[in-house]
Length: 117
Image 1 (cartoon, rainbow, N blue to C red):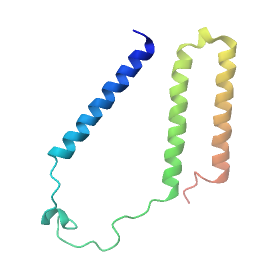
Image 2 (cartoon, rainbow, N blue to C red):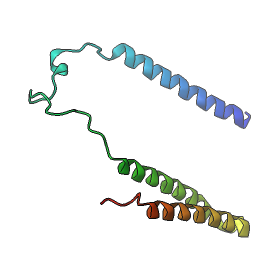
Image 3 (tube, rainbow, N blue to C red):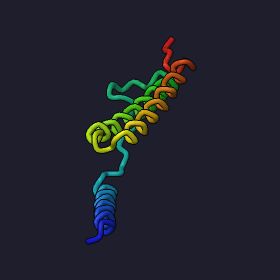
């Protein structure tokens, strides 16, 4: 079996399983809205304000920074395992990668994106 055929087979099976789950959910799940589900809260009180309060943009910035540095760690683990096989070229490539991320972090810090005051 060709390596591309294995990937295609994996994607096809995953897609079929997702379609089956979606179809079963649309058929089995109850879709009627009764009076209990239409009430605001369990206690029976109507909401005092708007139920959807907006988040501050800082939370999104911290989440994006977390994702960036999480991806950095995902790149660092395989690099650390194959460090000796990569040689000097692999070291400098990862050094450039870390410098670019460091410059981005310093830029975020200097712009005040991490300030909570």
